[in-house]
Amino acid sequence: MGVQNSFWLFVVKRLGISLFLLWGVATIMFLAARLVPGDVISVMLGEEAAADPVARQAMIERFGLDRPMFEQYWIHMANIAQGDFGISMRTRGPVADDLERAIPASLELGLLSGAISGIIGIFLGTLSALRRGKLSDQVIRVITVTGISVPLFWLALLALYLFNFKLGVFPGIGRLGPGSAPPPQVTGMYTVDALIAGDLATFSDALMHLLIPGAVLAVFTMTLITRFTRSAVLEVLNEDYVRTAKAKGLSSSRVLFAHVLRAAFVPIVTVLGIMFGAVLAGAVLVEEIFNFPGIGQLMFQSAVFLDMPGMIGVGLVVAVIYIGISFITDILYGVIDPRIRVS
Image (cartoon, rainbow, N blue to C red):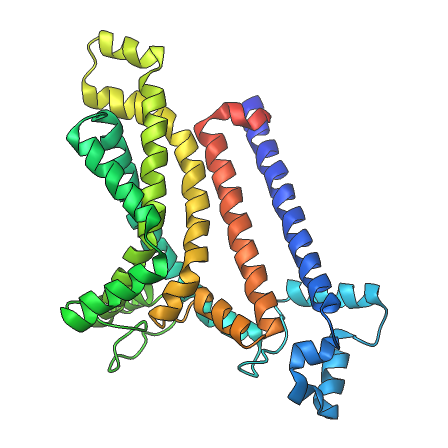
């Protein structure tokens, strides 16, 4: 009973920290919109729209911009809690609608990229540690150094040119081919929705459009996970209990899975969470290059058009994703290593 209580106390503490961070990000977004030079209405609507008295009055009433700062802050937080991020200066539609379309696309791309980088990175890192100093270890280390050094936008352009324009083995930009219609929306992720609808042709089309940008995004994170896994596994291999397990005659596979990877997975889980956040950061240019309508492209276009409501909305969503991943990582960390719960 005491163990269960300590676990739930640990969860509540981490949840409280996460909520506090979200409140801080939302507050910073509010201050950023109010402290930028010039008229806040012109910033939120754009100079041309702000000159329209009707649009200007509508913005004032919606956000209470004629009220004291504290009331504006309260309205700002209440709107965010309801998912109201304002009107996009770029699309002239609600920012929430843009986010509703972009989030599932980026989530679909991020999950595929995370799966590729996690599986391959852990495998290569473990192999490199077990073959330390041998040819395979040297090859893997060269691959990781190369992967870290190559600019992501250059790799995306190269992959698009090679696999689409030259070889034609993968489709080009977008989420679906020109003749394909999106499946009936359930989750917003085309591959999942196509499977739910039993539409294998659309599923195959959507998956093929995901593979190249997903693989490009996975390169950088995969190399970091490989290096981190190698270091973690090497550290565990030098522990006394691992040598004792080998001396008792346990098979190499049992020592690896029951002792080495189990202990090494604690820090690996942490870096996996961080790397998933890095996938979102790298998605800005990759999504724009592949014309993939996700959060990264929305962030890029909002910045180019100086769309303040759009940037605030995207910033808050990215913060929620980062903080959510950190929260889940902390919980997994506590599950794997109960000693963390007392911190």
